[in-house]
Amino acid sequence: MRKAALCLLTLAVLLTVGCASGTGYVRQDYDFQKARNVAVVKVTGAVPSQAARVQLMDYFNMELLRRGFSPVERSQIQEVLSEQDFQARDITRPENAAEVGRILNVDAVVILNVPTFDERISMTAKMVDVEDGSLLWMGEGSGSTGRTMATITGGLIGAGAGIWAGGDRTGKVVGGIVGGAAGGWAGRTLSPQEASTARKIIGNMCDELPRVH
Image 1 (cartoon, rainbow, N blue to C red):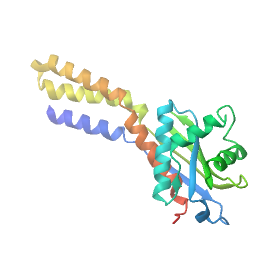
Image 2: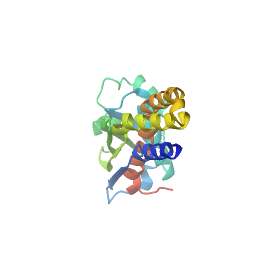
Image 3: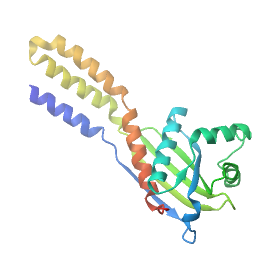
């Protein structure tokens, strides 16, 4: 009986593991050593909350740091956007993004767009030269969050926990209580999978970005 529970739990974990892919393209004639100071100025699209936008910005900054870039802290960017009245302007336009970059005194700015954020996450991003507004790099990627399987896996985990706790027919009540609690929790814990998928997507997108020194 308990072997069956372990099998159910193992299957649930395997079903919730998401996959991700991404790629990027750089401007071949540009010396990225001149673009060390950068700022991720905007995250747009179907992101569910401001907190999630901040997370995505942080993940992107981590990748930039890993490649030798010096990203500007997001609170400083928000302060500039507020002071310069950029909140009502479309800074996803290269010329406006470049203007923000000049005010921040950086070499390039990055804009991240998230068209879908559900069962699958898809992203596009671009790095813009603040001097002339030209594109230096573009990336795209997507991945599965495993959200489709959330209800199923919640039920599987709940059933597995029920079998484990109940053991036999005499333990059905205890098993049902434990299983219900575990299943309900599993159905709500999608954030870790989404975060993991987003980090993988961003990492894959940034693979073509040159390392700077």
